[in-house]
Structure formats: structure tokens, C-alpha cells
Length: 374
Ligand code: F6P
Image (cartoon, helix red, strand yellow):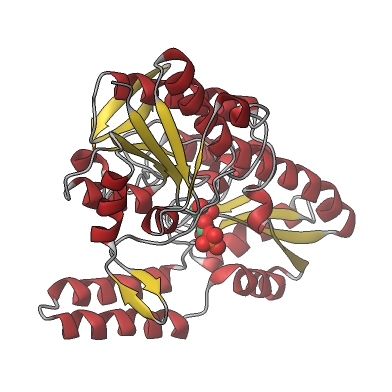
């Protein structure tokens, strides 16, 4: 009996999604003689049973395309907005899985998708996850597809900012994606030779950052590039969030948890932070004009790099082989040059942050880059 495969892409889009869809599709259809359908717009399409049949010809020419031919959304099966209500649509999703006689649902996504897929697997359906995100913060895999492309784009941006910063004797603060993990800012900062790199894992002291820039000025370098992760945090903000998070942990009832979450939001609003605030402070403290560049969605758009195409194809085809072998409930992870399977219960709910002693951190310090803490 040929197998029936459903595939969807969820969360923020990422270069390499189409290469992965193609890898799964071509291998399942051509090598293993399976049937494959693609649900539109993430878990919402599965809930509404909106799908397209994927055939060899529809997979041709998509390897190099950015975005996802299936569309994506941040919808969660257990908390979906339907009309003006937020409802748990898990049962409908499970029903549609069986209605389409699926043997497996393949979800291409990041940390959020992993959690959602794991929850669905607990409702009796077979699930496989492939790790994608430009943030590179999925645990148990060396790397996620999308990261290499975004790294290239952010590095090129820093390269370009150098000449204008130098010409105008300015501080150029560049905001790079990454709410929780600083891989992208750290990687692009090292590759682009940023003078300061601020990431969420290392709370910064603005005085230290200003000192580093002033030292450069004294040495005749009247410009600086500051690479900032979206989620970079001042020491003050980090301390406040820690207290609020502790309160959240201690909260027992749903009401207490809600109140603690509201407090976290209120507290964070009280402490200024973020890229604009950093630029304004540095301008005053260093007596150099400062400008801000927010790279934003440029980092997620466009054609994937060669490395991402290879990674997505490797993981996509490994996924097809897992389906052939009926190995379900796993994340297909990259380890060195191989693809391995990690049980979903070991992979979900974890975020791969930059360790304080990671070699990238050590190397950045050794070439004299200020990371905001010393
Ligand atoms: O995909 C992850 C990410 O790129 C984060 O770095 C960023 O904060 C987030 O997506 C924003 O995406 P959206 O606006 O699509 O929710």
C-alpha cells in the first residue's frame, strides 16, 4: 500500500523551506512511490482542510525560491482564532488527518512548531518535524535551514555599513533578528567585523559599550559598528525580568500566572531598551552622531544560499527515508554531515541559546570586539 504524506510549513518563513518541500516531495514520490499533499498556511490549512496535491512537476523550479509555496502562519492548533474566539481546534485537525488517510504529518518549523507537533503526536497522529528558522535556536540540531542565508545577508549589510560609517564618522547601530538567541547577530557581527555585538544571552552595560567606542575614537577611529540582536537586554532590564519571571514561577493559580505575566510586560515597558535607545544613549555618551538600520524581513526573504539548499535537501530526503521506515515522532536533525532522528519529547520546549563560553564568543572577545559586559 503506498503511503500518504501531509506536509505543512509553520511559523515565520525561512529561506530553504521550498528546497525542503522539494526534497521531501521528490524522494517520497519518485524514490518511494508515496502520495503527498501540502496543507496551506500552516496548521490553519490543516484545520480548514485546505491543501494541494504535490506532484513531481509542481516541485520543479522551487529549489531556488524564497518563502514557502504552501504559505505559513503562526496559528497554534490548541489556541486558534476562529471568528472572534480563540478555540482549541486539535480535534478538528486530528479528524482531518484521518479523513485524508494520512500516515504521517511532516511539519517544517522552529521551536513553536516543535511544541505544536509534539502536542498533536500525543493525540494519536504520526508526526515528523524538520528544523527551520533564521534564528538557529532549535535544540538538538547543529543548525537550522534559513540561518546560513540570513547570516550572509546580515554580514553583507554590516560590510556595507562600514564605508558609510567611516565616511561620516558615525556610530551605526544595526538591528539583527533574534528575540531569544543571538546566533545571527553574533555570527554576522564576527563575519562583518562589528566593533560591538550585543546579544540576549549577554546583558550589556551601556557604559562599557560607550567606553569601547570612545577608546576607538581616541585611537583615531571615529566610527563604530554596533550589531544588536532584537532581544539584546541591558543589565537593568535583565535584572527586572529575572524578578518578574521568578514571580511567574512562584504563581500557583491561573489568575496569579496571568497577573505575573501582565507585570512582566509592565516592568519591561518601564525600562527603556532596544536599538533606538542604545543609539540615542551612545550618541550622547560618545559625542559621535548615531544612526540606526533595522534589517528586519530582508533577512528572511529571497533565494536560499547554497548551504541552506543542501541542508534542506539533506533533511528533506532523510525525512522521506524515515517515512519509508515508519520512523515517526521525531525531529530530523543535522549532526555534522549526517541527519539523525531525535524523539520529539527530547527536542520540544528547549531553545538553543548561545553558551557564554561558545567559541564564537571567545573569538569575538579575542579580536577585541566589545560584547557589552566588560
Ligand atoms: O523566524 C524567527 C523570527 O525571524 C524572529 O527573529 C523574529 O523576531 C520573528 O521571526 C518575527 O517574525 P514575525 O513578525 O513574522 O512574527
